[in-house]
Image 1 (cartoon, one colour):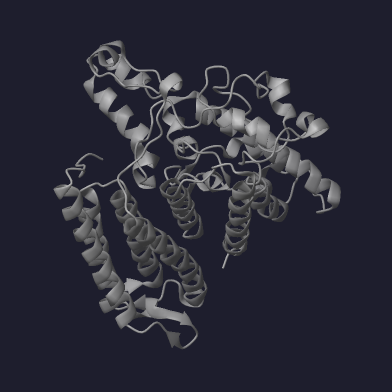
Image 2: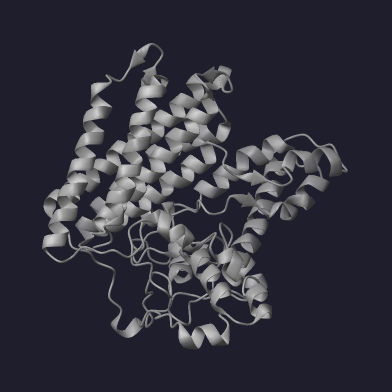
Length: 433
């Protein structure tokens, strides 16, 4: 099991505990910062990103270790000052990674999920991308490799740097005095997540706010301009899989629709939001109006809220189960079970997991597509149970009773059918993605 996978396992416990503390604090302070469907969507998004990472579903063009072995001029030992230099270097690289993700059409799809929530809370921090499947910013770490920062140092600091960006996604902490000039605070990052004109594309820094001061992208939070959260083109869905690819889908649509071959090519590399003139005039996209903006809301019931919450808990358990299975299969990851390897079984489990999240979040959308995705999920689920019973192992020789996942799959399908019929009768069933 990789160091990152172990870090994810413990980080998820920490994230859940701190979100619970934030929720309790918001109740005490009488501030509503959590919305159940949005929270479920956010945490579900985080789990899909974790799945992508722990199953290593990312194409690495050039690894840091390769650059270190071939480009390093110095051979330095891992000491405290090396960690400080590396951390600052990682933070500098993250500033430009983040900024470019905002500034170019083709790169915005890698980041849109993180800004898609119309709330701002710790759960929002978990909205991380599954669409960034290719590591394209390796060149930003070349200077660190050249001076000889060991790969072991980077492997420790990279997840720590990522997890350290969690805490400031909150509305419950006001400005923090002199720290506002040094580190990224909740106030700074609230600005970054806002769609107000004065706040758009500001405060890209991850840990040290001085990068924004240096490169001219800093904006303080103003008392007379409360941040409004979300994205210019509202996602209008709780399904994180759809949100991950909605901008990419729009780019493909616009590239197909425009009549100019030049625009078919340059649309990908133009500033985020740019569209060809002949497409923009004919296919309008309605952006958020801050003055009378209404947050996305769908029809729900107490039963649906309880079922969606239960689904979230079940999938949290599944995530830890997948992490365990990686360790269980670790010795013989490519040994075969029937005609498939352990790795392929894990991939199938991952597909089940993602389709399941798509199904129950689409059900929160009152969408007919939840029935289609739920059916696909159950086909995959029963296939796993029948052909690869190894996935039932939870600890050494202890296995989940076969009947339990069978009952869950049947119950999940039945409840989905029930709500599809109900939404149809209430004329609230949606057929759009």
